[in-house]
Length: 256
Image 1 (tube, rainbow, N blue to C red):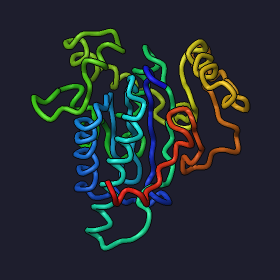
Image 2 (image 1 turned 135 degrees about the horizontal axis):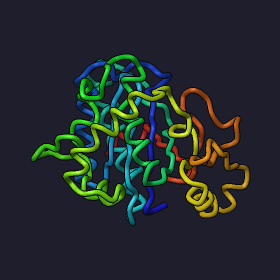
Image 3 (image 1 turned 90 degrees about the vertical axis):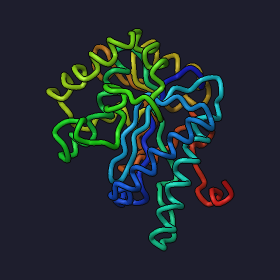
Image 4 (image 1 turned 120 degrees about the vertical axis):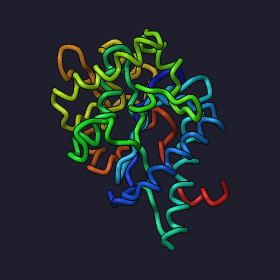
């Protein structure tokens, strides 16, 4: 669906720590920059951990931009790692999971959730200490080689450049002092946001939403969920909102 924010999670095969080396995390970021150039991908935030990635993107009128970008980044990183290590086999789980995210406060919470990933893991005390994420670029944008689509981010947050750079660090700090546990609303639902937003996503799904239910998480947050049996700890739940079957076939990447 166009004109939506998507939070994408993708794990390494069998949750192996295939991204434990900084060079591979850096390679993922470099290929993300290349995907941005090739396909016009609008990246709002990201982080690369030792065994999975988080990516927040805006889907514009080009519905193929996001899946093509994911195919490029995942395929190249896996190929380069396997060639260097003389390794065979899948690098990634064969499915990524995409959650449609409402804007306003929900978007701020999702941005902070992504930046706090390595804080939750106990690796760092603050996102500034993890260089393989978008926090640094949002707070202190570089002059060259930018990945974050700042104009889109400012539009969605209804803010200006000064407010974004001055306030974002405080927003994340505010969430750092709260519950930083993993929250399934960002990683295992089809949509997260206001009741109106989630109902709209369900309506656009039509018949594909027949067995999916809306759940009230609290007074301000609703989610559209898959059938309970669709999920396991590897984020392998099939999600047909972003792309039919939402499956990437890694064996075709050799021809990219």
